[in-house]
Image (cartoon, rainbow, N blue to C red; front, side):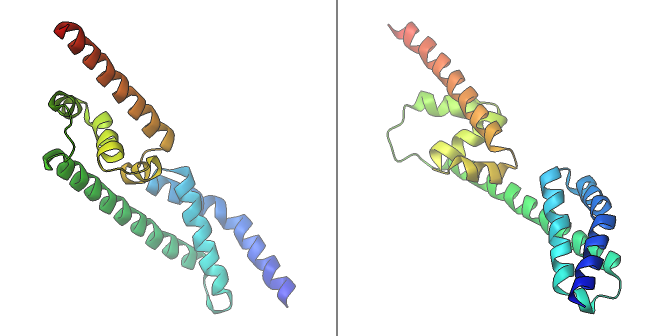
Length: 163
């Protein structure tokens, strides 16, 4: 009995996983997330295997709910980033930072400013900045590097003018 259950589940997985993952991919626009959602749907099906009459329907409804949860999470993260950047921009700095540096950071393009504010001003690790912004860790590192280079070049020019 147990062998036939595993065989049936394996056949169902082989038949439905590619289309379910593809469907999820179109909804979330990210391969890794799509595969995680599809795999989680199958995991939940497996946990209820004996009580599910229509496995295909169960998989798609479960995946749709997981996609909706993913979208909600992204919206919460977007609001948190907005809130964090707004608070960082209006909160007075406790350290005696050079006001010109603060102005320079504020003048950076948003793509570079947000990681700088979250990483350096809010003391968030790169991984957390990546999660909050929905960008890959490598992209965050590259943006931080680009922002530091812009700031360095501007400060160098400012120092040259004062000497």
